[in-house]
Image (cartoon, rainbow, N blue to C red):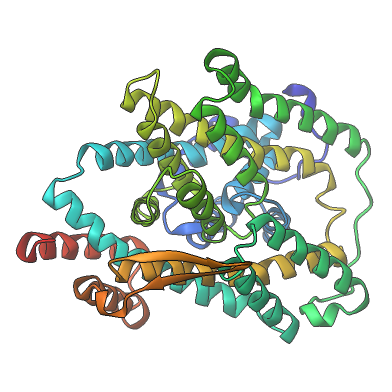
Length: 446
């Protein structure tokens, strides 16, 4: 990968490679709290404490990463690592940001399948479901306040919700339509998207197209190599091939973070493929909330369960582990490829009005998608039976109001008080609700 070196890393008080490696490992082990907490922690360590990168470049790198599909915190780590030590620095930063959480998520997935039926495990998951519902609602409110600044953006959010909840439109279609609208409107009426104008663009970096082409070619080869190997050895119809292709597609449309793409993943993993149940999807998000690293590691949990339920010719545990590794690979290799391919253009993108418009519109649409996810989770957490109904193009969810789960509702209310009134942190919220879930299950039963 040495040929992908780009000639413009920033001149900062760069540390030695060994020192940086230790810090990136520390960040990977402590990166709890979702993208907001992870970005804040990187800012404190890298900008305030170490002074390895200055504030403007850190923020510009973050803005660039938000334009890309994939987890922006992990991509920001990759970009800063590249700034300091080129491609090897970017690889180390990006990989170490993922690995600790990936190993923890794998362990939790194993505990999940092996501990099923154990009272305290089931109780903890019961409590975590209530925490997940509140966490998703909290994310909806936080992102909505930041993104919906104009009537057009509110309209895009509403249209996205209607499109995915009532019309079952695919997530990529919603994101693509929003991007096109934002791209077009920004040129003539940027105020409708709350876009600031006037920032000058930097001169283009020399040789940027060649460097991007090399990075893309290498990235594509690495990305698809394990999928191709599985196809050759197991046949094109094996579940590992389906997993590799599905999560590769997911990696291309993960604008707006894990909460947004969960709706698309749930639609496919639950309804199309039957890999997991709605309850397992909620459990997976709850487990992912307790791990360091990107929340999108929930995809690893889904991949694990998918292969665990269809293991041939492997043993179930072996199939799950292989699928978890494959899912993680095809989820994060593309996100790093975007960074190495886009790095030559990053300064040129500063102040690009049309790209800013596309991002603003995508973010607004993501709010509508997260609202869909919030309603979907609420129905499956709080009610005993939920059925999807169709009438032509229209889709809705039927449920019996009398089947309200009073224990789940009470736990959700407690979680809401902890989050919105007492302002407790994410990890504390999950741990407390898991403990309460265990208490409820052991004292009151199922």
